[in-house]
Amino acid sequence: MVLLIHTCATLSLLVLPHAPPRAPPRAGLARASPSMQLAANWATVDAATTRDASLAALTALSGSGEAKLFNSMKLSSRPVSLRELSQTTKLDEKTLDPTASEFSLEDIQDTFIKVIVGCSVGAIAFAVGSDALGLDAGFRFTGVYLLAGIPIGILVIGSTAPGILFLPIEAFRAATANAEEKEARARRVCTHEASHLLCAYVLGLPVQEVVAEEKGPRVVVFDEELAQQPGQFVSGEQVDKLAVVATSGLMAEASAYGKAVGASEDLALLNQILLRCNPPIPAQKQQDKTRYAALMAWTIANKHPAALEAITTALSQGKSLGECLLAAETAEASRSVEEQAAAAAA
Image 1 (cartoon, rainbow, N blue to C red):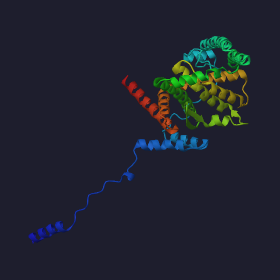
Image 2 (image 1 turned 180 degrees about the horizontal axis):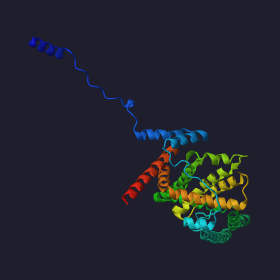
Image 3 (image 1 turned 60 degrees about the horizontal axis):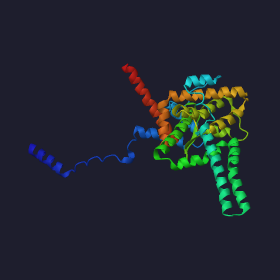
Image 4 (image 1 turned 180 degrees about the vertical axis):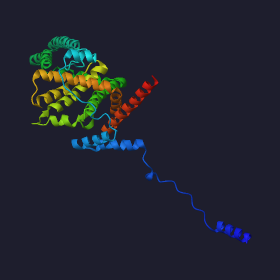
């Protein structure tokens, strides 16, 4: 009987097939990693095409704890003197000059003197040479007149729009710049725009997009674009935030490079916004508000240096808006962890 049972068991093992090994899960069904899921969440910011959609996406990320910097800064406008601004930021008053350009007054004077001397010598040489060759008197007069009129034309242009005089110089510098100079110039533009993006983000202003242009990236803020529409007025609270965003590029450049040369368009926009404020702001209070905005922009950049650096790097790499904000949040979180570890070690 025992032998029969053993024989039947052996036969069952031979006849019944073994269960096939379990197939590995397909790649498409695998769970997304936390980093992939995090990036997918921030992709909703890039997908938003309206202000309301962008604000909703950022609010949702803030509610889930992923956008801790968003709308984390509150403003309380007050009068700020130029002296206070200079002493607090440790920046010289000349550094904070909004009309500063890449070229100094000495550069302008030297260039103008060289032009006068060159045109004078050229006019004399043309007059003597054309007379020796026996050219037509009218042609000789016209040539000398045109050469002598160049300094007068430069003087007229310089008194009305001096920036136009240096467009050829800037074009020549850009064409002859080496790789290191081009990289430094691109980094400067990215620092300027990163400050715009960071300040708008922490003040709760949704950003429309990051546009790649020939000169570098450009941050487009929904409320800035709306404020420029015909017949549009801006509330006092909104003016405070937009003023900080507008002056942030100037403060970032001044802090990093000792001088801001790319703030003229920003300050022209700020002036337009201040004039559209409802209720209107008196001229003296406009200056106070501008200096307060510059102080707050400097404060935000110094409060979140890791986030500013991360956005600058992301912009230089051509990253999207969502990727730039994710980089800022990641850098700020890492900085918090390092600070906590340092405090615990101390």
